[in-house]
Image 1 (tube, rainbow, N blue to C red):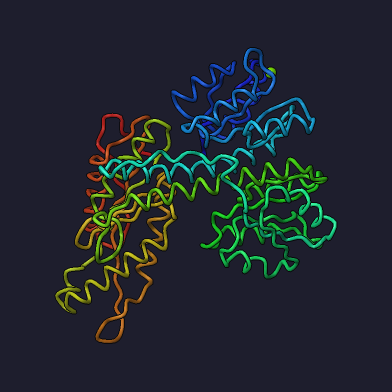
Image 2: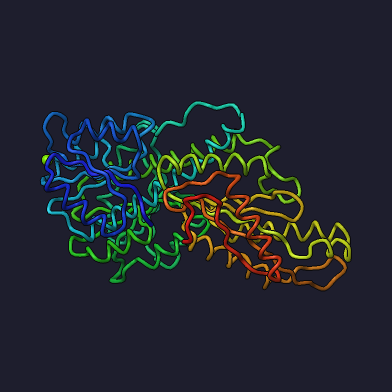
Length: 469
Ligand SMILES: [Mg+2]
């Protein structure tokens, strides 16, 4: 996963060190040497994440962070404060200014990369929700109030499931979080903790990195892979010495962590930050659902229709041309569909369409868009994906349909296949338009049909800048 990172530091030498490290991991890096320059850059082209020096003349890092977090347009961009100060008071001050994480100079590579990746993942999710919003406003659906990033007083009574066995730690957590009136539930069986979270009765999970002598990484990855808990914030409690395991935990998708001994204010602020992000996601989703119109979905398959797809892809491409990044478009057609209708009747044809729609939907990510263009033709938009990723997903979809037995109304089953034309939105520095992408994917689909069906073919948009990838 790549991302755009803005590094802010008044000392050019510091900038160079961080920039070199991040560029070597293929991040796209811009730099600023003062708080004001950073704010200007963020307004011109918002990055995915900001690494912010604390001690700077004129405007210090706390002030910059406060300004960013007060502006609804920039409040959701994660900020990592890079500081020479190890003092807990300074960390609290940073968290109060809205910082998402701290790194202490000299910066430890492992922490830097795992932190950056985990925060970028979150940002990508937020952006996909924003694209949905932009798409609905592009359709002329009345724009409601811009969804603002939640404030402190909007988050209380967070339902937290804690996997804690140690009575002393349990009491500590209860005492520390008492003032915020959260609903704490304690569990002491690692085996059933995933099931507990599956009930959707909790907003957050708090657990130690080691429970009864065993690392809880497997548990976290289970939580991440399940539909009900895919976006559930996980906060971990770790020991100073567990750095490697902690980096792994963040890679798996753990959202935040505290190092023992736990500092009361830090715990409160970190829980609050996670709760605010969760609420923000919920508000964006709700706002999207509210503004959605039935005329944007296909009655038979319940997928989005062509009208919504058009607006969605336009919004996505607009965001990409501003922020960078690429996405893939697949045009999918059921092979020999006409003969299904002719042989078994239209009711059978409709059943097949519904089932194929379901297979496409369940085998793509939440942030991907699946729509029915009409007849037996579908599209899938895979956002934030290279052609390689798109191709893997396309082949997975093709095989899924190929291996599925479709029940016949008259009894028995039948097999069928799909052909896929796929293209990517970005080649070199050129971001293509919706029409260019559709045309390229259509031509590729035609080639797939011509070459014998049941296959995926890549097509490139026509452009003088286009080159083979
Ligand atoms: Mg400095």
